[in-house]
Length: 220
Image 1: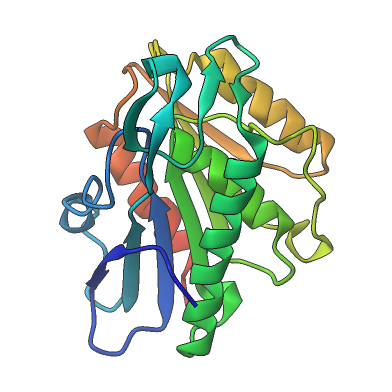
Image 2: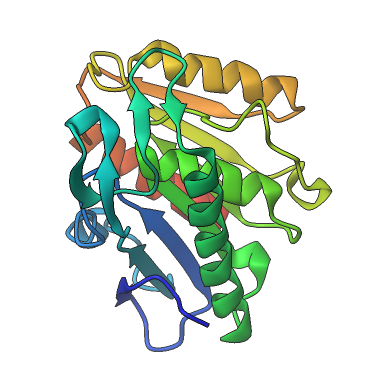
């Protein structure tokens, strides 16, 4: 099996849970590594943070420039025009990482998926289509790209979903997060939503809320 290359941070010598966290367009798996200490999680939490690196591919909206990306974006309208095959392949690559953690002894119910922007769009697809129950889904400054084509898995019908977004985001306008919220509700989910006066980024207040979210999702 060829897995995505990843940065891995373990908070304890005896790990019992995992957070798989995807970066956005043009970034890398190193993007959110510095956030781990900023989360200020309790020392007793034994987590493995997994930060995959997306492959470098041409991006149409950027004139075909090659950069790390989970899928190509063809047009930037409100209803993003994307390469569906690529987002499905990226979701499968994330599922492969989930299953690697399961083979390492981590229960699926102790695995959280998180993703920023493009990475969040992939985690929506991966988490909601996965056939075993996951601990939760954290969607950061993102949108639900595959809400029209998703085949939901009954195992994750009750998955806790938490949306975090910037009210001043020029790249992924907040209305796209609100549309994701409504699409999730239409699928029978009960997501939570936090907005912050920021752009396409992460702020200190949000980091604190993400920390509290992870602690709730992975409490023993």
